[in-house]
Image (cartoon, rainbow over all chains, first blue to last red; front, side, top):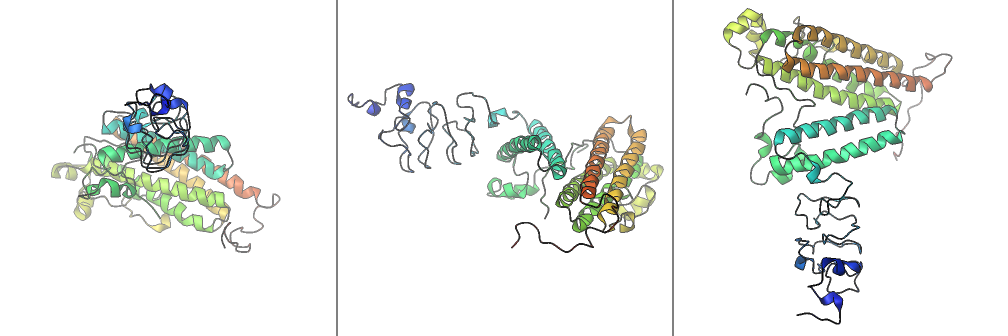
Length: 198
Length: 208
């Protein structure tokens, strides 16, 4: 049923219309609300553009929680903005995790897909770039370009490591907690010297 | 402390064992100018470097050298995996095999075991940095010597070339570190005092 006197109550409205009121958008039952609280999922589960379980965290007023509206803002760990991408991480403003195909940040979809070897090669490359930059920064600690270069590649590295652990198991002991619930997979995946003639 | 990441800094996939190459390349593992020597040298020298940039550099290059010693020992392991007794005896690996089978043990190609006499920690920043510049050149030369032998075996030559290139880059960084140290000294006489020993002990920044 719809309440024609209050446009925000009409779940059949287009996503555009729903999102236009930044404060109460995304089909939020209470348009007067800006910041949404843990218990208020603002009706996003009813929104075809977003399949999220978005009652997790407090969101800022501008966060369309995956409705497909922009701009989007920094989201917390539990908010996958409906992209269905895991693991989820805090994303910068430009990273809509591929929800609207926009430019900017490294997204899980930017990582090589397909196989372990190509993802590992990617990790090797961005890690090397970051480490070599770190050596340079040891003797040039105030080089702004160097700092930015390090940050960019380190961010890419962190994203890729998370994806690797999700798909193939832990790359280091920090990751072993999530990847090893019922068994200590750490010992079972290949050790790095086990290439070649196995 | 050190944390382990389960990957090599650069991939190594050697499909054909070769006992002779393993003996030669052993020098970059446990030889005088090899990666164990480099990592122990830098990680030990960092304690007597008052300049924080230099202490940082020695820590980070020393850590990368640990990754390199892992690579070299991996090369040796893959070159000796699956060797037959005939190959072992014919290649000259016999004496090593008696004491180590095909395990990986740090010694030079000529047989001298790795030992601390192969590196120095003088406790003087200028001296130690010159030691480090020399160490990187010695390692680079050793890799050049290895490449003359393995140049036609791409699966071995490829990671060796990577390691050689890293030595050259480390040499650059140590040169910058030496300049940094000299900037903090009396330009008329760099040797007037040992900045690590002759100046008062200071606490690190932000320490209470």
